[in-house]
Length: 115
Image (tube, rainbow, N blue to C red; front, side, top):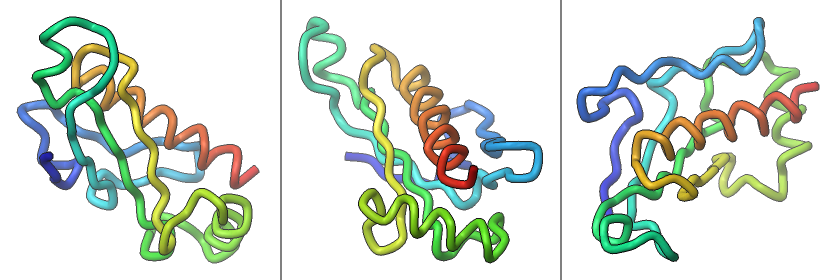
C-alpha cells in the first residue's frame, strides 16, 4: 500500500479541487493512498494499485471559513474520522481515472455539505 501527498503524483499535475467559486481545496491539504482494487476485471486490475483513497483533514484546513468548517463538521459528522473526510474510488481500471473519480466525489460531498 502506497501513501503520498496528492501533490506528489507520478508525473501527473495535481491541482486544487474547486468545490465552488468561493471554495477551493489546495492540493497540499490532500493525501492519497493507493491499494489493489478487488473484484472482476482480469489479472491487470488485480496486480496494480488502482484503488484510490483520498483524505482531507477538515479540522486543519486553511481553505475553510469558520462557518463552512462548522457546517461541514455538523453535516458530515457520521463520515468523518477525527475530523478527516475520506472517499474512495475503485470503479475504473486505471489509477489515474480513479484519482479523478475520487476528487470529483470529494468535491460533490463537500459541495452538498456547505450548501
